[in-house]
Length: 346
Image 1 (tube, helix red, strand yellow):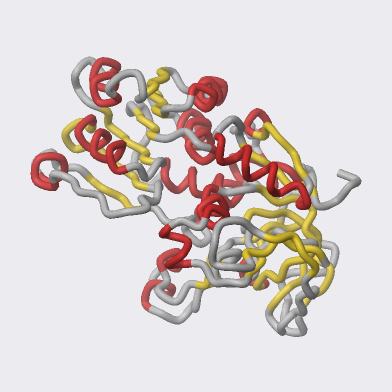
Image 2: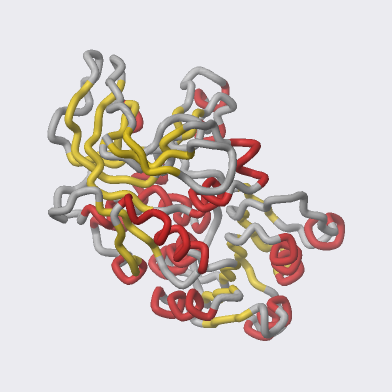
């Protein structure tokens, strides 16, 4: 089969022939129909400091997908050939204290699909049967492959109370844009979108943001304070990972606000812990992936009942052999979500 491989520990990738993986007793083999590019994939493609410390090579990367099951392992009972599926990307041990107390998403022994084990930028992918998510048959392939990042947005938005509260989403890349839609669907108050990219800010308006703040032109902190009549924002969803954006977000938070951090900084971030967190009584939540599997059921409920519409988020389609153009576009920021079509019939 053909796959997109992080072959060497340097920028770039190679589209090459690789063996079709075989099922273990607890695995399923999925013929991938669609996949999509995540910000994590951009880190891997560009080979930044985080990637160099984290990613196993050589490896087929990519972790957002939808497809059809073609084979199942001999011990598999919950999945059958022909099922339409996606999958949770964290492969956990199931035995440690975190796993056994409902916190498997932070299992210390996690293997990450498309990061430390082979992923989905290929014709076929191996998925542990316990990680399989069955898709509604009416859900389009291009939407089904977005459930992994949508889960990140859902977990970030819903890690605390949101109803009626003012919300600032710092960094409106694809997951930030999803967070706009989720916050609105879940009853938030005023939604402020902060970014330096005019294209993405206009997309945020389409997804439901009430206030657009271009932090390259104005002070994000001052703009948020103005939009909240000097009170500060009650919920901050930090999606950028940029050190200054994080500092500004903390300063713009109201007393007793909730700050949920999803963006991954590529270096250490210095903050005024006393003034900006302790004395303000902030709740700070670190968000990693999705809660297994609570978040997936929330995602399915939002999609299957039409509470959110992700179609406007998808701006470009490519085939895997067009990966260089796709990653160049993703890096430019002049796009929403990019989907790879693995099946020419789609």
